[in-house]
Length: 142
Image (cartoon, rainbow, N blue to C red; front, side, top):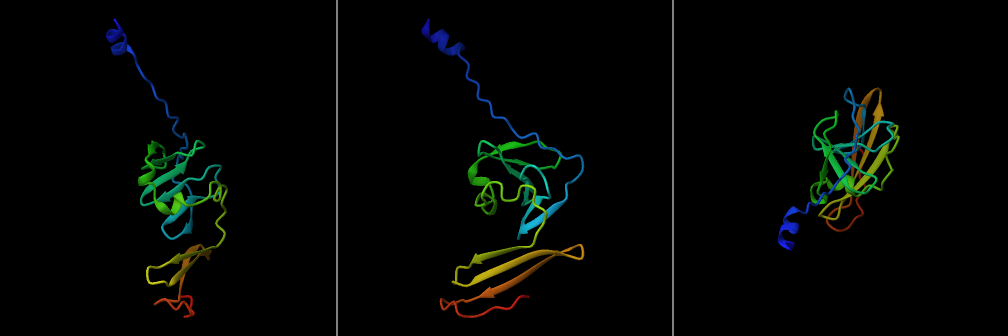
């Protein structure tokens, strides 16, 4: 009798996926190299590596291949590292202010990126500092 009951038992797991959907491609803002966010939106919707990404209120990550939706839960290991490290809410209602980012390179040098809008175009300036362990070389923006 117990075996029959065990076979009839059913387990349901529900994960509520985001309902974010855009009728047309949303305006995006570059917030760091390779990472864009939907401009001035109620939720943080990122665009990285050809996919849309968002962190749910439950802390889980979701991805969609299209701006019209189709969100699926994403395993933490497949979420792009640059957006996992961002504090939740940092780019909510982001207006596209200039941003500056630093990347530590394997040789000890530091590369800084400035991203800004100028005359309707996105400009990325790069400056490298240090290197070979001394960290004293000054860089110039290029």
